[in-house]
Image (cartoon, rainbow, N blue to C red; front, side, top):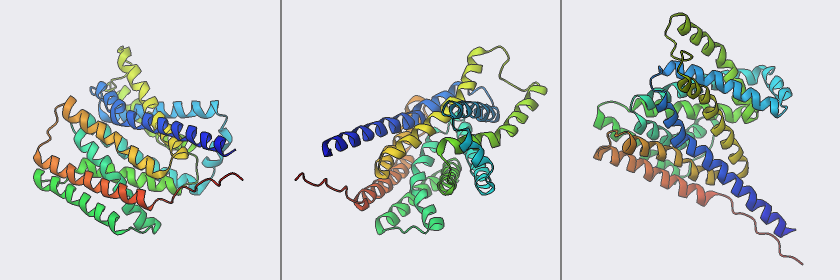
Length: 309
């Protein structure tokens, strides 16, 4: 029995790692490459298409999974709907800044934002969820702040793209943490809440002759439609991974996404990355190492199976 249980847990862990790797590969490489392919389209139009087609894809999954009852239940709960309106606004800001940054040559800053994000989550947990920090976690947050400060001093301005991405996604995660809604249901409702605005904007651009989509370029149209898929899939895979893996494992794998974005920005698209940038990122990576080691050490030990007989 114990052998069977151990084998089942091993399969569960392997599946979780595969889901996590798929999600972070898409966020780190496939999604930014996807948006680069539609860089001729204004960021607001890409965002509008992303929202509309993500809604279609999420509704399709709910139809296949026969989860209409859960969707209706969440939509008719006033408190849940109010919080999901807030999370929808936060994720829309995050998506818009991310799309603009990728297509404006700021992939390095987007990677910085998602490197900062796990540490910002710690701070938000302290401020809003009354979680406590140990000395190592406090040190990690201070070191990360020094990294951001170094970038601000070297450039003469705060790295606002990174900070907006980190804060919007961090606050989004905080809101979703306290909303008792399944990941797919919550994502679908957020997309549906934003869809009327997206459709209204797309209609406006079509009437004024500013719309780029559906004007004979089938390749571009297909890429815009696929933004719904590239938006929904990694979120669903991430939720599946979170159910199967320890949080410490998720935390370690999470850094693959911004690492991929950084590599793309520097090596594929030639974005500037000087000594000050290297020093700042070095401080961020040091902070992440301190935080990760602290998380692994404070994680509860895995109970040993009782011996037979």
